[in-house]
Amino acid sequence: MITPPPRQRLIPLWFLPVTFGILLCVGFIGGYWVANRDRGLTNPLDAFRSSSKLVPNAGSILDATVDRIEAEYVHQPVDEQTLFYGAMSGLVSSLGDPYSNFLTPTDAKAFRDDLDLSIEGIGAEIGYKDKRPAIIAPLPDTPAEKAGLRAGDFLLVVNDEDVTSMTIDEVVRRIRGEAGSTVVLVIERDGKRETYTVTRARITVSSVTSEVLDEDYVRISLVSFNDETLSSLDAIIRPLLLDLPKGIILDVRNNPGGLLDAAVEVAGEFMGKQAVVQEVDAAGKRTVDTAKRDARLPRVPLVILVNEGSASASEILAGALQDAKRATVVGETTFGKGSVQTLEELPDGSQLKLTVATWLTPAGRSIDSVGITPDVVVASDGSESDDPQVARALELLKAAQ
Image (tube, rainbow, N blue to C red; front, side, top):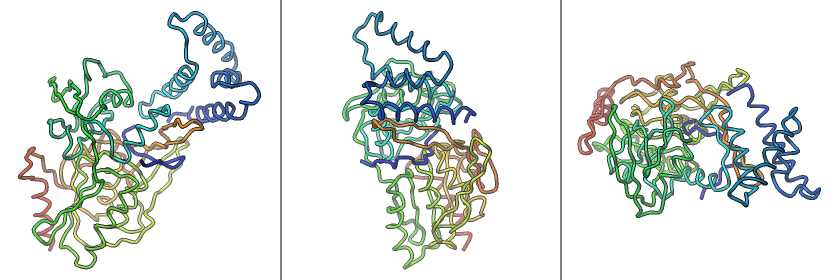
């Protein structure tokens, strides 16, 4: 199990002027609760009531609401911890940003499972497309891919339950389940509804794999950007330094993203200590993220493969290599996700996932809702035996010799 640092920059799929106030409120409530347990505030709702008095009239409104629930709600007893978590979730959801979430300890554990790619489910990254729950990318060789689910499929129903207005975390919880059990998904593709019954499995996927193509060319596939990505990539690159290939295909198709820092350092392996991405925060301040490593493969001809399942961190990598003219981008227009989240651990094991910045390519391009347009557009025909995008990438690498 990978436990993220207390505050980690993420780019899975998900700024408003009130962000600072929200963070103050969340931090105050958590700290107040912990610091005042010995003063008689033994449950989180007491802390919430006390902290709410910072806002005029909020205390009396909250007191009246909680008192009414605890005294008159028909299904008693009411769990105070559940009420508190519900209040915190509502606080963050009021931002109107579907990618900013308050995660209970249980949900936080599920999110950490996403980062280490070892979970029980169908093996698909779920996010938003056109403000609707959708499949960003089915991971390779997983039940989702084998069942025929595709990047861009809109999720309508999960096991007879309408999910169109749910948060991503709520949708994910309904799709996950014990290995061997089934889940019925109703999706929308090209305006048509289709139903898929998918058998869940234990999903364990290596974030980086490689294979030799035509003896002198290597394809490196990046499935996700997590804490293991850089060490796995290093194990692949070191042998290549002894006998440089004629070209490398960097494959980030159906890679839904992950950790920002990992994507930045992957770019560094091919372009060195150059700007990889610009972050723009709520105050409009721009911060340039630059790789910290020297390039070990700075001159090997490079093609990067993308498709509509390439999102967030994958788009950062492709955009940086494209702006630097270090690689030719081949495939289909990417997903178009251009925001950065932080993940902050709170005292009880819950987490706050908050959108804190938008990002631009080094040349200042915003790709949010637009995506990265390939230098060479090649559509996929869905064939497993004959991959036209890989074939075109090989042609380009051979022509560069």
